[in-house]
Length: 109
Image 1 (cartoon, rainbow, N blue to C red):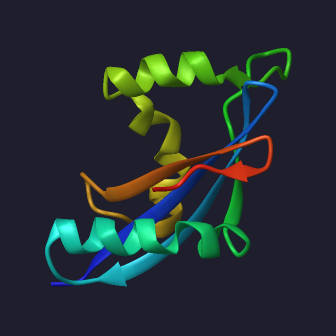
Image 2: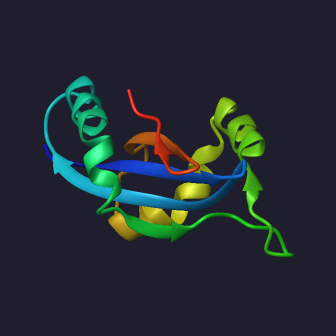
Image 3: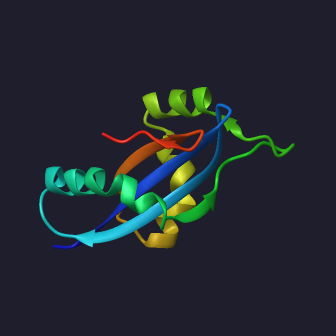
C-alpha cells in the first residue's frame, strides 16, 4: 500500500526556526526503506521544497530552536506540522524525516 511520506526542513537562522520547507512522496514498502530514501534525497529536495510558515508569537517573533528541541524530545513537535499534514493529506501517524538547515547549511546524514 502506498503512503505519503515527507521530507521536512527546519529553516533555522540565528537560532530561530524561521520557516518549514517540505517535499512529499508517495511510496510503498517498509519504513526503513522509506526513511533511507528520504535521507538520501534530503540535500537534493531542499531546493524544490514548498515553504510553510513556522510558529511565531503574538509579536511575530519566531520560536527558538531550543524550544523546538524541547517539544521534539517530548514528541510534541508534530503539532507544529499540522498545516503541512493537512496540505498533503498524510495518515494519522505520518512517516517524516526532519532535517535542520542552520544558517543555510543542510544537516543531513
